[in-house]
Length: 363
Image 1 (tube, rainbow, N blue to C red):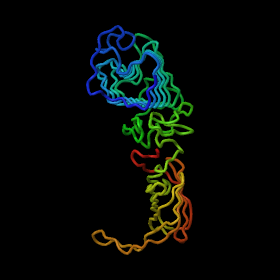
Image 2: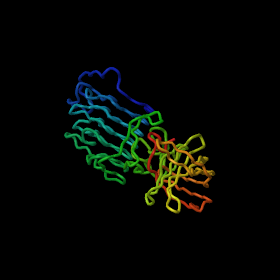
Image 3: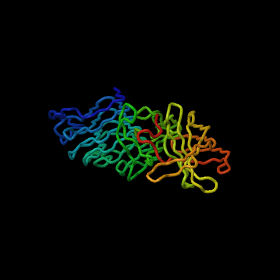
Image 4: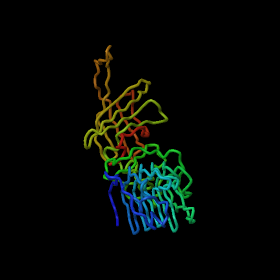
């Protein structure tokens, strides 16, 4: 069975305790609590594809997810679920689990850990984020010897319990996680901040084609977790260029881009002339893919600031042209050409300094 594009949230009525059983939770452990099963119970073959589970209290059950069959998770977000009991793992596994490009964070997992493996448990994890869970991210039964998960690389974690040691596996103090929400898609996921170590950390061999929102992932690397920052490196949408850019080697000048219509963008360049005088120029240009051409750039000259805030005497004066090439979510190149000897022509390499919240470079 497959579940796709689904957000699982708490029911209005708390989950009632189930009857006692020798099959409590998994492998017959009596400590599973008053419920027989996890909130999600799989004894067969289950695939969660672009699914989120959030805010679910499972302290009255053995676990949030109980698996004795084969469970596959792709672009799945398991976030801020509440298992308060001592033995309340987020995922209780006595079967086989494969986790790709998923985010598991903020769960109160108890001392049994976020993933609790009980024989004959096996887990494969790739390009995923496992952080800020109440107990260790991985834990095995004290009764049966269970090997740690097999990492295919590209994972971000904040403890050593999973023994990740493959390519691009990263141990971090801060995964740079943002807000949990739909972010323009159907399925909720946790956004990444612009400086997240999960960005471009995934190994391309295990990258999903799209993230939980359906936004394209990168062609040479993808982000760890269910959310692709930028919706795919090189996959720049029309609004994706909007933001603030600068050159860290040339302090004091900035380029601001704001999409103002389907195929038009405002470009403002705060800079200096060749004599060292500060100035700013602006214009609205046509968007063509990742390229913006402004053929009529203006400069305001002669304005005077009057007491109280009024400005008069400013005269818009044609300045020249700008071409901005924004090839990906992080960098751009500004080419300028002015007939004025104060500026001339040239080229400036830029880095993105700010993004628009919940937009970044995604479609």
